Image (cartoon, rainbow, N blue to C red; front, side, top):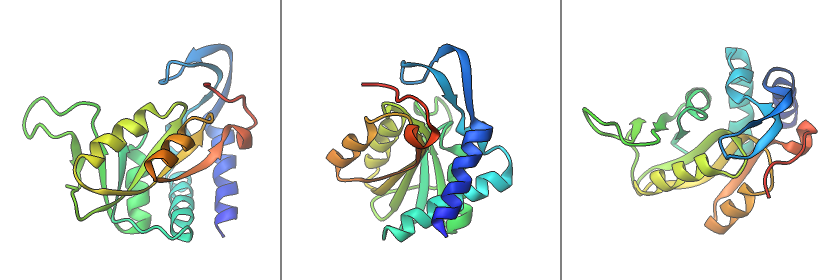
Length: 186
């Protein structure tokens, strides 16, 4: 069943989130590309977010990983975190890029996570992995165990070796190869 959902997800990303631009644009990684993948736009309809969330939960579960909280760095992880939490019936959280400057001054909003938690880390698109690895460091700092990381799209070859060096399972749901676009980065 996962293969079918993953194929549906690929088609959603391809038709609703992938734009081929006349001129290259700068990505969050600083890299330039004429292929822009917008996971947030691709999953803006609940039925599409649900398919993505179900595909992710199935993929991670079939690989033998269990989690009780899901989240990642805002903004790429926001909708995914809530969608996956809904499907998996678990808690969600969002990691701010910097601690809140007032009130509680938290850097992680939503579920409070710590040493007893098993976390699934998510992001929409990865090029060099800057955002997801920032979230990884912040979540690790709580003492929570990051059991796996998932991205909607991996645009290159840089994230997997970094996750492997950390001993963290990594599941890109689509890649530059499956989207038939050029890889980004070195």
